[in-house]
Amino acid sequence: MSNTASGLGDLEQAIMDHLWDHEAPQPTGFTVRDVHETLGAARDIAYTTVMTVMDRLSRKGFLDRTKQGRAYAYNPATSREGFVARLMSETLGELRPTDRRAAVLAFVDDAGAEDVDALREALARLESAAD
Image 1 (cartoon, rainbow, N blue to C red):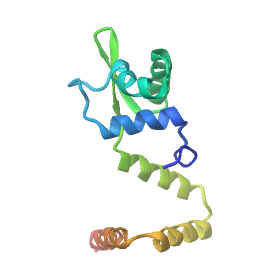
Image 2: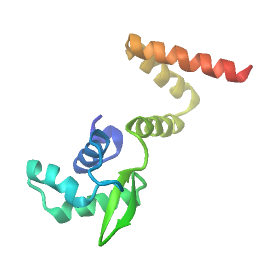
Image 3: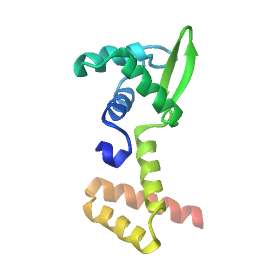
Image 4: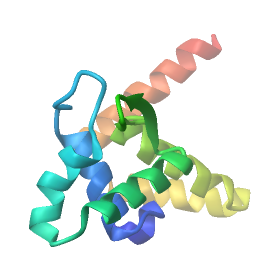
């Protein structure tokens, strides 16, 4: 997912991807140090930069933050799938009904076989719930 599509900057997206893709080294979550040790070396960024971006992600509601001694521990506020679903829902919600239908149909046209199967299952659940 590009940062333009997600509404996140490059470093914000890299941090979220890291947290979604790795198991937290602490029982309470990831510290800034944990993330910086991985991303900081690869990207040549300062500890304080990672700290600022993680604080910003917390204020935006993308990360949950809890006090852990003198530091904070961070965890994603939602799964990657939940994030994408929220993004899509917000995007579709901003469109006029005819544009929303066109967008949904375009997604279906681009979908692979597994996506179509998942869509069929979701539609079947909706129909069952309506009965």
